[in-house]
Image 1 (cartoon, rainbow, N blue to C red):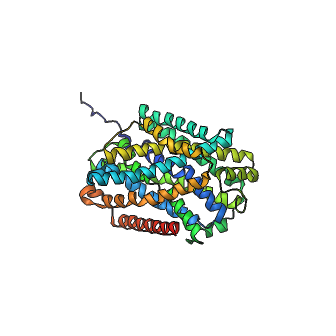
Image 2 (spheres, rainbow, N blue to C red):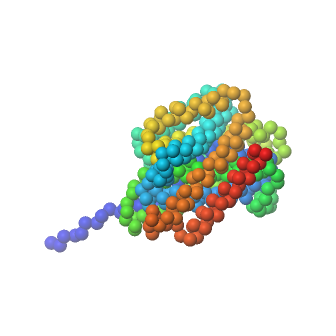
Image 3 (cartoon, helix red, strand yellow):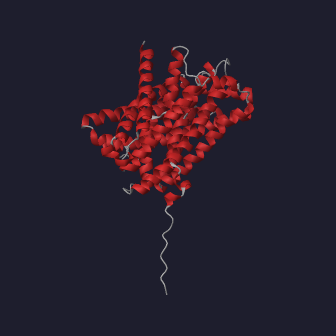
Amino acid sequence: MIEQPVRSPARPERRLVRLLGPAFVAAVAYVDPGNIAANVSAGAGHQYLLVWVLVAANAVAVVVQYLSAKLGLVTGRSLPELLGDRLPRAGRLAYWAQAELVAAATDVAEVIGGAIALHILFGIPLPLGGLIVGVVSMGILAVQSRRGQQPFEFVVMGLLAVIAAGFVAGLFVSGLDWGRAAAGLVPRFEGAPTVLLAAGMLGATVMPHAVYLHSSLARDRHGFDPDPARTRRLLRATRWDVTIALVVAGSVNIALLLLAAANLYGVPGVDTIEGAQAAISHVLGPAIGAVFAVAILASGLASTSVGCYAGAAIMSGLLRARVPLLARRGVTLVPALVLLCFDINLTWALVLSQVLLSVGIPFAIVPLAWLTSRRQLMGAFANTLALRITSGAATIAIVALNLVLLYLTFS
């Protein structure tokens, strides 16, 4: 009797659908309440003028998130861990401080957005709404702590689907001027306020904490294996993961701007999320307004959970200290609750938080572009010449925009 060879089971990385997920978690950061504020403000105030900013920012985000995932897969180390290995103690502390400030600004925006949505839907007072958002996000994080990363990804992807449906629904019943929308693809500004908004939109699209986190997500999901053949397969799947996830996120952002440009331009009182939602309900009907509010709530819940996860990865990598996710969630909730207790323009707080994120972007993408181009670290997977040029050009453009932003802000 001839012994038949034992057939090994198909390796899971051969099935593309099983590899999707990490980029969708990172992509949730690109559709948080800060995006809503920045994109609605841009569309309502300047109509289609800044469409090009979102298109360009999303293209940059695809490159940046792929580089972050590649760094984790090839080296088995996250971006914060690699930076922590190369910086002296004082440098690690300073780098952690700015990254933590960026993550805190993100969390404030996300909790505020969720609280506003609960107030719109159920009339819940803002401080109580912020507390509810914090408690629910603890439940989402508990899924990751107890069940692992993949169930957490499924929860986040479900919330992302709600966000996409809620923000895109209005486009089907609104009258867009597609000719003017196409003209908005031509890069231009109209004064300092549009530069400030563009920086906020950039900060809301290319999220520093998502850049830090994605290297951890990809590494933790797929593990580290020095086998070049397996790494190539994983990188091929990662390109699909990043592209699909960020096309979804980018489409949502553009839909928000187009919705505001077509329906809210010249309408008084739309400089707040509540005002924008009320105007959408008045113009497009209460059903669309309710769906819009539900999408805001889903956005706040998903993005604040991912932001807290990112903050833990940043602290672990740079300070080599681990704080339980739920304990961290409780501490980082406090600043948002304090702001919600005071009578301030919360929408502008959201926009300004995105500007702060924009200032933090270079600290994430400059070392990312440098590390992924080093052959001593990446070996055969170091960035190609085309990728080095692309990432370098994107880095220079972002730094230049931030310098202009700082000048306009202080002058």
